[in-house]
Image (tube, rainbow, N blue to C red):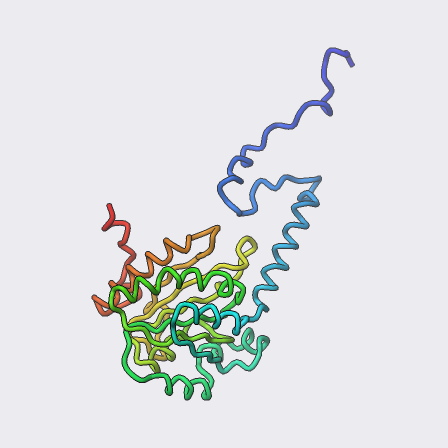
Length: 258
């Protein structure tokens, strides 16, 4: 081989056309490869992300810490649980996570003194870590907006082993026109602590998902606390004004600002 000709082994690799996209997404793209597999660093990162997602599913609410934070917002707080007795049962029996435990229902009835406009619920869902990290920062921005607008607030409810639909029963018991639940979303491999917000007008057991509105991916890496609070405030006002929620209620906040 001529010394003037570079060896194929010394030529720099061609640039990866996907690599520039990694600056815009946490999705697993442009991972590279070693032989027929991904590089060791990427394989280990995948296993770490999978472990974080599993940990989020089995995480538990720090109820005392959460209620202490809520007390600093000058709101009444009530702690309840669903009919699921423990985490394994909660994961295996979604139906039990949608209904209040009878003792918790009786407890809430004692707090239902007068009709309200909004019942706010914090629930562990599939990532208690998400609620622990993000729920209070959202409420710090949202509750003053609701109070300034004249919304009558029911006591804030902290619900353990709870699914989204438990908000329907809680809202009905508290005589609320709207039930808003902040709940840990199903963990992803790039988002083990994403918070979702669901609300329903005229809450009552038996409603299905088309009756709800959702604002999802609330976290610093996704939808910011400030924007989430603004969206929820706009949608809750519209739901109360139009007396509906779900597929008939659209997020038109951006259209009004244009």
